[in-house]
Every structure is written in structure tokens, then in C-alpha cells.
Image (tube, rainbow, N blue to C red):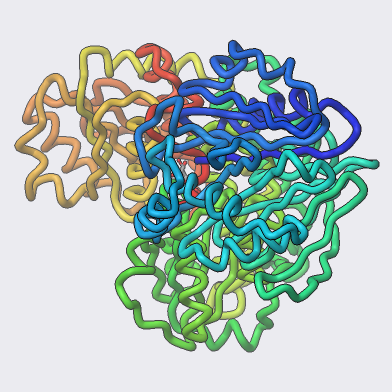
Length: 606
Ligand code: G6P
């Protein structure tokens, strides 16, 4: 999604901003641009395509100690040089970069055109540059921007630079994240802390409805109404090296490999071997509050939603509380019933996904109790929920989630054990699960060590354009995640089905060219799943089984066996080979694995 980065200080701004843009590339974008201020002028360069294509315009040579830059993900207007940000007013004095959508852009554009403004792009953002130019009455820039924002309806994270006010940049936030980075005699800002960590880990998160005047020696924040706000800086817990690819050719592969350590961090200090339960310090709900919970509703998007689906099974199984996961984007629009005895859980790696945030806000507005399962500390969803479980998985750079899917499911397991042990889950069962979680990272490592075998499984997809992923109960959530990974990174059409549903339609599509990946734990549903395998084989479909060792009444075309751990937690392990499978199919097909076409890491617009 769109990214913003800004700098003001004593150093040359252009190299800092261009490096920041490279740091934002992982989020997904279609064009990039930069505006540098110096000697009363702005120099602007922008280009469709990658940041390295912007580099060919040589913006690194622009002299000046303050500026703003942007990676754009098209919403209004096609990806093109003219629609890339920054956007300027007619005189070129003011430049704006913007994430989000100006909903009343068409009406404003008509009014501004009547007043003589000439538009040079199809974007909604450009109206803002013209508005500032018209409304500048010589007040401080933050006041002018505040007044202009009063005319805007919509969501934004934006930054403004004025060639003639070299000591101040202005940023504002309403629905799209913005973080200030505090340096020594210099200030930074970005829509994503990833662009800042190289320079500072001391940050201030803006809240919705806040504007900040950013100067080399500090910042001031205020609300849109002009009331001063007081912010407390926090520290980003990630080091710059965590964002490096290191020895790996792809971030996705690196992040898959990081899972044992990431899971250890999610578990860190949370397993309680005295009472055979889990300790969740980020929950503000005590035992009595949690005993009142009659239902659990889990919300998220993409892989986060599917981690929620795994979590719903865990909670229902271990705590015997009806639990259900739903895409946050559906929930927020369907005027859902919010009940006081339901526990709502928002799952999000970034903590910035717009639909998930909107669902959280809707639940809070209706008086529901919500907690967040979030990776990025201090992110909007984490702050909005005010309580929850941080994953501590480290930064995830590949657009597709791998380690944070696993860590979110592990966090769900921690919560499910916690809720279960407050109810009917016995000490013995608690002990069994706590023990299993302790060794989970080693089991993941053992699967990862067998990567060459999984790479061979990928050959089953040679010549295929479609695949089915099949599973039952929690296995279905894992199948759905496996299919999501495959379609995202390999561009193969993959569909996940509950095993029982195959005969109600999809069997018509089974053929020699349509492999089916069957998630086949050796649990009490094993025999049922074998019947499904038979149905597929009888129609000539190749079957790839991800399963546990043991005699099977039928043979598979290919299989990958992992030792069983505990039935409730086995789905988490069965997912690991599916991640590697998607990766190797993509590798064979030569796709852009870390930045799949049309996808963004963090979808911060509707
Ligand atoms: C985007 C990404 C997915 C991710 C989803 C939710 O669609 O491409 O990989 O699962 O957003 O992101 P979140 O940050 O909320 O977990």
C-alpha cells in the first residue's frame, strides 16, 4: 500500500528519503516520487514503476535538507508518472503526499477548477495541494493545513512541504498511519516504522484527527480543532538488521525459516507449568470477566482471518466456548449484532489493516469487549484494542504472511488454553498442551530441515493451472491458508474446500491436471478424510497428502509425513510444509515471490 517518508534536519534529505522509499517497497506500490526543498524552491521527481526507476531521474542529486517522498498504490487514476505523488499546486510551491482516499475529491475539483486551478493528474490528492495554496493566509503551515483539512472528507495520512517555509513540515493523520521518528537535531516521519529504524527507534504515533508540525529540533501536535496534544515517545523493538534479507534470496523464505525463533518469542514467558495454563500479561480481562464469555468472535483479513479460523477451532475445542472467525471486512458492513458476553478478537500482523481497524472501532462503539492479536507494537489496532497478545515475531517483510500466521495461531492456542483452564480443561490436558507448546519450535525446525523433500512435492504442480486444498475442521482452515499462499505467490488458481463438501460440487472439476493437497492428520476424522481421498483418486485426480506416519488404507501420489505432536496443535505443524510448497511452486514458476502482483503488505484503505 501507499507509503510516506519525510525528513527535516541538517543532512541532505534526498538520499535519506530514497533509502526510506526502498524500505517501504515491500508494502506493494506502483509508482514513487520525491519532493526536496532548498533555496526557496521545491524539486520534484516522480515515476511509474519501481523506486529504482525513480532513481534514474537522479533525485539523489537534489540539494536540500527537508522533503517528503511516497510510494503509491493506485486508487484514483491509473498508475502513471502524472498520477504519482507528490502533487503540487499550480505554482509548484507546495507539495503533498497522501495515503488514503479523499471522498469529496470530485466536488472539490469542480470548485477549484472554477477558481482557475489547473489539474495535472487524475488523483484525489491533487485537490489538497491546490486547496492549501488558495487558503494560505500566512499563518503557520500547520494552521493552513488544518484549515484545508476541514474541507476534506475521507481518510488520510498526509505530509505537506512548502518551499517557502523551510523550517516546518506538516503531517496529519485520519485513518491512515503516521509515525514521527525523533533524531538528534533532525526529525523523520513515515507511514511505517520500517522506513525509520535505520535512523531512530524513538517514535511517536499520531492518532486520528491529529496534525503535527515537524521541525529539525522537535515537533508539536494538535487536534484538527487546534487543541495541543501531549505525546509520549515509545521505542520500536526491532533493529535495522531484522529488515535485511541476509543469506536468503527471498524474504518469504527467510521468514519461513525464522519460525522456530519467532514462535519461541510468542511463547516467551507465557507458559505456566505450575498451574499448567498460560500467562497472558497483556489481557486486562481477569478470570471473572473471562468466565462470563459465552461466545468468541475473531476478526481479521487474509492470513490473519485464517489464523483466526484456526484459533476458533482451538477455543471451541479446548474451552468449549462457541467460537467463530469472520473476515473483518464483511463484519464491519453487515450491521453485526455485538453482544456483551461475546469476546471479540482482532488479528493483524501490521495492526494497520483498514477493514480490521474499522471492525474494531465498530465493536467498541457498540460496547463490545475486544482484544488484539497483533505483531507491530504500538500499531493502530493494538492501541485501539488497548489489550491483547503481541506476537513478537519480528518484522515481516514479504507481502504474504508466513511466520505471523503461525505465531498468530500460537497466540490463539495460548488464549484457548487460558480460557480452557478457567473452565473444564483438566490439569492433565493443560500439562499435555503446555509440554507440546514447549517443543513446538523444535518440531517446526525439524520440518524445515526437510525442505528438499517438499521442493520435490512442488513438481506435482508442473503443468497444473488449478489445485484443490482439502481439509476437515481445523484442517480446513489450514487447507484454506495453504491455498491462499499458493495463489498469492505462484498465481495458480487454488481453492480450499471442506473435505465433506467435495462431493457437492468440486468433484466435477477433478482431473489428472488438477492436484489436490489433502491435510490429513491422523486424528479421529482420519477415516472420513481417507474416503475423500478415495473420491478424488477415483476421478483420476493426483493426491498430495500432508499427513502423519502410519498405515493408510490407500496410497497417495505423493505425501509428506510429519510426526504427530498433539491433535489440537498438529494443524499448526501441518501448515509448515504448505508454506514451503507454495514457495517452491512459485520458485519453479519464476514469479515475484516477495511482492506478488496486485497485492500489498498492509491494506490501509477500504
Ligand atoms: C494483506 C496482505 C496479507 C495479509 C492481510 C492482513 O492482504 O497481503 O498477506 O494477511 O493483508 O494483514 P494484517 O497486517 O492485518 O495481518
